[in-house]
Image (cartoon, rainbow, N blue to C red; front, side, top):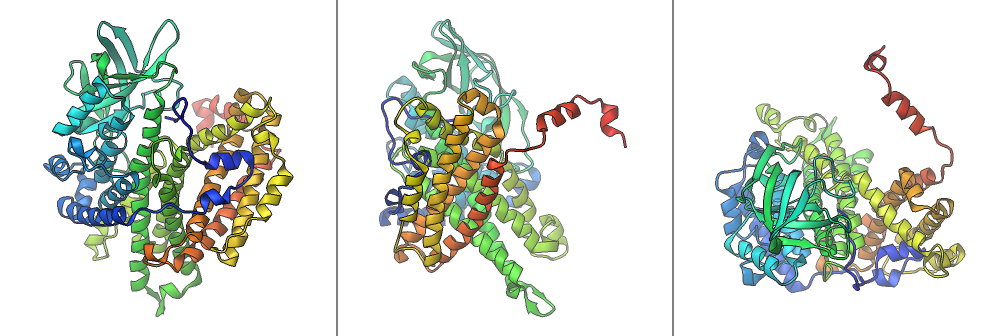
Length: 577
């Protein structure tokens, strides 16, 4: 699911503008967003309460082993307000901001990713979240009443054919008073336990198909739960295929965009925010857990009497994980500490991959660090008296997050297309990205200074600004060589690499902005800002160098020919020794 701004609405300064012009507008980044003291204190209190609640109520190992939730957990989540985090107070909710909601979900996931994701789905893409996208009227009243009385909900967007088709294969046929839904949805979080679901479906019509969001109670005739889905990670998360056999949905419970053939823009913007909640918050929890597990492990281990923490490679492992967590926090704060759905939508799109890839690096690194204790189940560790760190579970959970909410490389593909669209749109005009010269952008990059940064980070800032200009040149060159967007999109690898570059650059800029705007009163260890920014950007520049080198490589093996020949082979040919 992608997002676009509603007609007539404009967003504040976006990193997409920096990339498309080749100029890093450092003044727009310099004031790093912070919560008010009141909001910070509220979040601190709620996070502490959540830590106590989930530790008392959920045996994470048992949930993972049995794939079953504790009896009565959903009722307890409802009673304690965890299924109404974003619901307005007038409907019995807490009315929390996006970042405070993210903090609470991350705390729940730090104990159990599966249980935390139940909360995330409800407040990220379920009815509680979708309420903000609904205009005043019968549909908003219907959803609001369900939330007032207490409901568990989910949103079904993935069809059996996959998530990346142009339109859903679930159909909604117009009939008197509403629509009949026919088809199936797959991978619907909270689906087996939901009282209310929303699904995307295609409405056929003489003027062409449209896509809408359809809201219905799960006791509606014709609705049923298909097969339960059991993931390799997030074990215990209620998930299932949903079947619709001529399910009648009243017209008052449908949201259509009269001017487009996709989901209404606000629904897509809600989904962007929700994706960070149900993938990014668990990723943050895993990365922070890995940091804590690494410290505890290193503190109790020696090799030939020498403390493990004295070894150079171990020290580098520690600082890499510290810097990854710092970078993930920076991206999340920049993206979520915004006023509305339309603010920083591009950065929110980028943030999902940054968080889940950061978590994957940290958990992979932590498994290696733990050595003999890193590739072992909790039960095995308990049997032999080892510290029962659940690294095996974290490894499975983290890998699944790179797929949830759309696989990571496809999100890179979509990001690359967003940037390239700026150049295709401006190709026949004298304005827009094509009007800026590479020389002007590079000159501006060399002039950037910030007294809030250390000398090393000052140099990083200028280097990143130069890379922003290089990204603009790379995108412009791709469009010059492929003026037809469809032709360029068909060559997916350059587009995917462009998306990866955009993400790495955004995270580097966010990290430097946070370090430059350091407020000692706002962090428990403010000395770390400059050092961790330095570590992160050094590694980001290495990754960016590789991405740019691959983007500029004009000679490659013929992957299409090789894969087609192999795929056309017979079984005997494939297994022949």
